[in-house]
Length: 185
Image 1: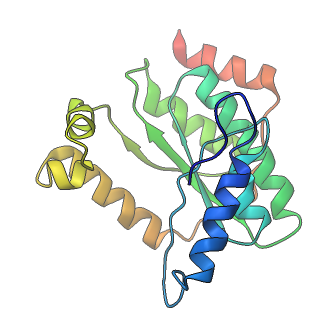
Image 2: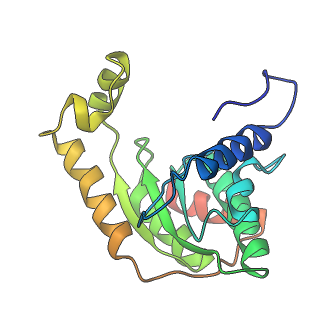
């Protein structure tokens, strides 16, 4: 969707302009699912624009098992909770983005359970994603028969059939640190 030049402003404005334009073009007519991939901007709230403007009802947070990624995911869960109190938006789960962290899948499962949701899937790290980016293609277009493509297909199916939509209960930072430390030892 674009946004301001780095250091100038917040991506939220670019996101809302893009969504308003798509709506004016009737791009949302007769669709079952629309995916928005927005930055988890926990400072200016760019991630919240689709929620606040009524464009989102299910939220999926992508996170690795790294502390700062979980910190951002927890902050996004705080935002989802705030908006859930005002409307119909719910958290559908955590999408694990593998970064080869020790016991990462177990950590992500514990984090998800602690905030009252699920690890909807875990996507292991794959060099094929990097190769697809170099070739300016999605992984599905670049390597449709790869094991990684199968993970993405399984993710789509899990989201499509997901019925576990919750209002999250985010953690305090100290609790999050303790959780990460427990799985990192």
